[in-house]
Length: 572
View (tube, rainbow, N blue to C red):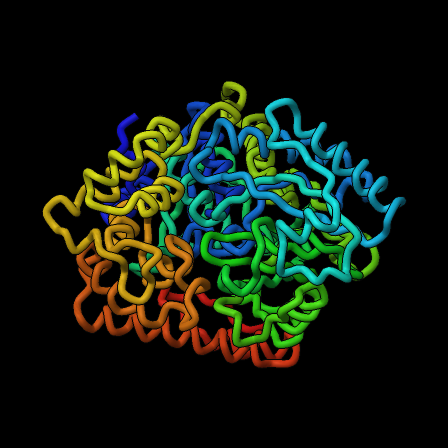
């Protein structure tokens, strides 16, 4: 396939919208998160014609705000949900070994033991089963540790809180970049994609859904996209889309998860850690030069576009992690905070979202409309496959079976060879090998495409001002090839500047906007407006994190502007 087919620049978006208005597709997918992008890839790789629309940015919702883990879920074993764990571990193996080894990496965790005999037997049996369910191509097997061995791996741990531990391995991913790679791979296989394109209604003929009405949030125009089947992959917005059809068979409940990001030097350790809490589990996750600490699990009934962390969430996470650290963290140690919403299948009774299932469901609330909801990030491919299987049953012609279990994402082909050649690549570009490694683990074999403009512009090989983890070339590439339409898209999802710097990316805002302007044609007034919008967003997030509860935090966060025309939901 032509690599240019993966380009999601402004001209490609204009062409995509024109095609969407002119053609009739086999399938139109609503939602550019990981499941929607996966559904578009599944359909396109079967030879179907498919259009994918996203109201905001790729992975703007749940799919950029997860715990960044590809895992089976140890706690689901305790709930005896063996099917979900087995399925997720199978997907973990595919992602690590076949689909995107440049994006999904092994990560180790220590499970600290606090009781001498029975707990080691109980937990050890569970982790043994977890490893075995992962299959012969799984990660390094678990090992039992003495107290001294745990403290050697995790010196920051208080010695009086454990008697030993068990180390096991799982997978880690930058969720936003992975989702983007899925979407771009769908484009490579023929899918027609447009972000900042909001579905405002469903097209109906004789009681059947035959397409969607869409508002272009950049240009302000309206269009209709016709298709034999409409697939609703909108996560926590599932019910809203179903309501446009008049009814729904599956319903989603939003659970808020909050994560803290702190510098790596604040916690001295060579492994991640998983801790039990009174409600669920808490992860300390290595994340490059940082740690991710999370998560919370609370019901959320407010604005879905603006999940907000509050002071109680932050205190909860700090309290639980500090209970085991010999040098407690303070709020001053926190670089970044992010909140996301999990789309859980709604239970029949009870208010505890931590007990709701992570299984997924597929239904047809109306002829021509398919909804898929629930699930977890790791099993996105299975969810997408099941949704397209259901859509195919409603097509006039048959379609081949799914092939996404053996369809590598862009950047994966030749990755092992590119990794082996990283020192030579570093010499060629005059960069440190650590920089090339970082680029390879973000872009894979698209690395040369990212750096190509720097052949005549050495400044693009310099770190982005205010965010030295990333190169200036990556910002330019985000706008030209990765579909970034606004400054927030770059600083929060194409890079993680908004959670990896103490100023939340404010210093990097103007330099990044100037680079984006070269591709998107922004004038000085537009650059200034984008920077101001981003700064206001940071201020609103900081304000929400000072509030006592969800209602007041949400009200503060809701004040953050959105530069996409009409993209912000009306307050309830």
